Length: 352
Image (cartoon, rainbow, N blue to C red; front, side, top):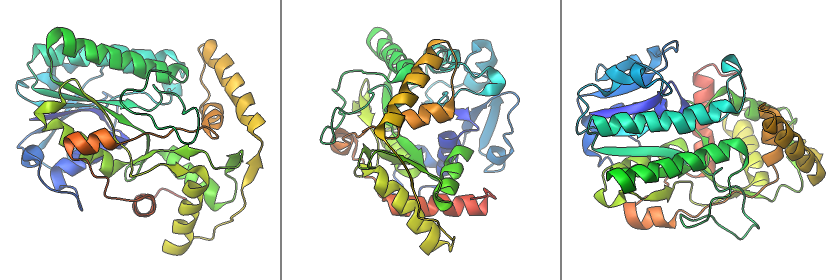
């Protein structure tokens, strides 16, 4: 049995699709890719129809990671299962208050609830998804985060992921649980959230803001590369207690990211692209950082200001440990991944 939290969700939905249909272009070597049962934890009021339609092998269990009692059905008869804990908050939901407390309720307290129940029900292997935000930003363009880099969390989201990782490692050290942490970067690909499509639209219309000269580097994680890394880590017994960075082959500059999306929109799909960029000085990023810090200090969160504060920063990692220890190989490049992302948007009526 495979258990997945975080349904519906960008990574959770894609992982469920991969477990049902396989992963094109990657080795189909995962023994549970043909498992008889995949159980997904879906929020009580969320629409899970797209997941239910995938396969009769998928069972949807309603529950919320912040409410331990609500996950009884999800963990029923789960001894020996593999659990992918993907539920988390990146940008707080205004319908749930929109404040920074959501980071800690879901990413920290929710993870503890999940691990308590995984221990109680004797789940065999747990893969927990973390983030690059627990490391903050690189001090320069040459620097790469590794698994040995110290914590330097950025804002409340980064701090919540740091606390989450520390809790996970406590279960490994104190309770001898087999848990592996996977750190992802800027995720993109099929099933992407609406905010990613909005970014494509801004690029198409020439309205995307560029803070500084655009040469700052970002590691990105194409969603199928990420699924591959998670699956490889889950079948390797030597990954117990380990942490791995999972991202594309190399970091990309912000200029390259925007230019690649514009090129794919224009030349692969025939969109009319305005190649103008809204050039802003680095001071704008600094001001956005100060406003973001002030708002979050008062418990509030503004997604646009937060994203603006990050746009001229370097956030680049090394994937060499994952290559060496679990055989991770990010097959798709940025251009190939963006082509699939845009194609998915078109096929699923996401207006660009």
